[in-house]
Length: 175
Image 1 (cartoon, rainbow, N blue to C red):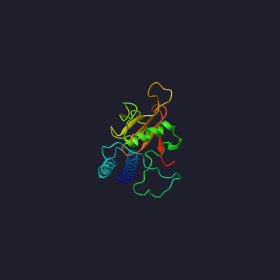
Image 2 (cartoon, helix red, strand yellow):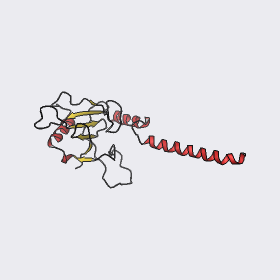
Image 3 (cartoon, rainbow, N blue to C red):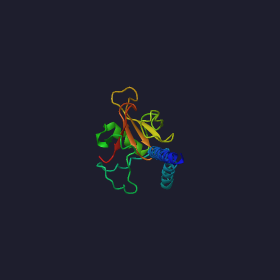
Image 4 (cartoon, rainbow, N blue to C red):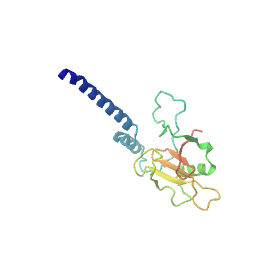
């Protein structure tokens, strides 16, 4: 009887180990919730002396094509490879103007520009509260702020939304 139970115990232990490994890998892909991910981002911001400054222009995204070599140090990697990029040159001129104001730190045309974007629907990668900030992109002919926004992350990434946060595209400044 002991001989029959041993193979079942071994199989059960192996299955549990496999499930735990898969769970660990899936949890590791969440990125921002991992304590070391936050610590390294904070250390980098502190080392550069810009932990509390407003975000500047984004660092370039790596070339498309699925390169398997690691990116050189300091090269920016898209925050969400599944999210579509949009070339900065393809944005409306008002969005490019807003990006210029962000790079200079203002002044902004609307009092709500620069406020914290809460990412309630989690359409952007999950980050700590206060990580994202929103800026209005002027809409010609609109009597209010309109629906167009640029949202920036504290690591320099920038996102475009033409439909009041229903969809986002990551802005690629290389093109």
